[in-house]
Amino acid sequence: MYTAFFGLKENPFNLTPDPRYLFLSPHHKEALDHLLYGINERKGFIAIVGGIGTGKTTLCRALLSRLDQGTKSALIFNAYISDMELLQAINQEFGLEESPGAKSKKDYIDTLNQFLLDTFSAGGNAVLLIDEAQNLSQEVLEQIRMLSNLETEREKLIQIVLVGQPELRELLATPSLRQLDERIMVRYELKPLEPKDLAGYVEHRLVVAGARGNLKFSDRALARVYAYSRGNPRRINSLCDRALLIAYAEEKFTVSRGLVERAIKDLRGDGAIHPVTRGLGTQGVHVLILVLVLAVFLAGFFGWTYRRQMLGFLLPQEKAAPLGRVPAPAPRRETKAPSLFLEEKASLSALFGLAELGAMEGDGPSQSGDVTLVSMDIGPEYHVMFKKPFRVRSSQGTNPAPAYLVVAEVTQGGALVIDAAGKKQEVKREFLISHWGGRISWPYLPKGQDKPLIQGMRGPDVLEVQKLLEKIGYLAEPTGVYDQPTYEEVMRLQRNVGLRPDGIVGPRTRAILYLMSD
Image (cartoon, rainbow, N blue to C red):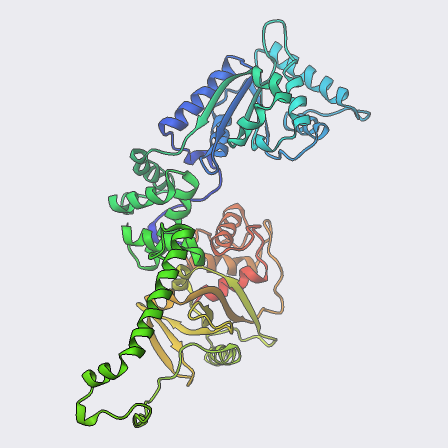
């Protein structure tokens, strides 16, 4: 969403395991060196363990890109499989075709063994890499151990790399897997980034994404990123991505510590610990509540006991009224401003009223048909892209009945919101973001001829979508042909707004494009 604004080619902090973004910190370089050593020296079994989000899968993909052409590789991601399914998956990954009658384990192993012998005879090597190996059953791990018996008198025919979370180490240490554990010749535990590596990590990802030096994180911002993430790459990516969204919403090219703090608050959501009670723990919170209750009780007790003295001190003696006969204050008439928070029916009435006005002025869908209400969960940073009226469920108050803010127009510093009297009231951007509950809705009238657009199609509908994508900052050239670049930009839009990134321009993707177009 923010890539065009910052001049980036793509999102620098995607969570996908793209090997281009692998930052070789000292830990990651050592892990990669261990892998290459174990494979090139034909050590047989290699085990790499690391916590969630430390970059194991990205490391695996980077490893495959560094293997020479003579090394054949098979990569298994699904660890919830049976021993027979494992053999099938391995042969499929190596591109082996089974004979029509192949049904037993022996048939699959014989095919694999012949392939490995042919590869070895040609001077090549074979690598089997299994990710999320901590989820493998003991039966499958035993089958993997048996595969290591495929060897010549002097060399291992297949190098098996087990990659997993620390639970893999505990699993291999069980007595039933002792034989497998003793065969592992190379081991390495992947650690999080060190504080000194964080600046290089962030800079590396920005450069790969196309940054030209105008976008940066301040030193204090990086310090806060590390304090939150503890060097975990996945948490770093999530936090930096959210911080860039907030910076984009405020049109800033330097991410400050304050922006990072707001990003942390967004990521924590409603489950964030209040600053007063942070660090106290459950027992500390209970003690604090008990102290507050006791204070209220004591204040009430002393207030009642010394009520006469207090009244005498607070009021002139001649005007003090007898207890129980204090005259009621004269009623004051105050003009209460219409509320900005509307209930369900009022918000829908205001929202559809704005949609009808836009249609009459030529600013909305003019085709005949039924207007539908599209709803999605979208973060507050995206509201600066919205060009049509919408409503957002408010996060204000504890009333279980939902309340909404109806936004007629997004302005430079905030928005024009419809109040209970039907008038437009200007609010600051901070007000809108602080009351943003996440769920937004807007009216949309699908065209009668709308049909899903998929890669390979061509025509005026494709051209229209390409023009809309280009208008909101996506790199789709208006050719009228649904080509690969258009497909990738549609998926990027879908990922950014929380849709399933399937590359199909369906009703919800069209509705988002409508909301973001002039």
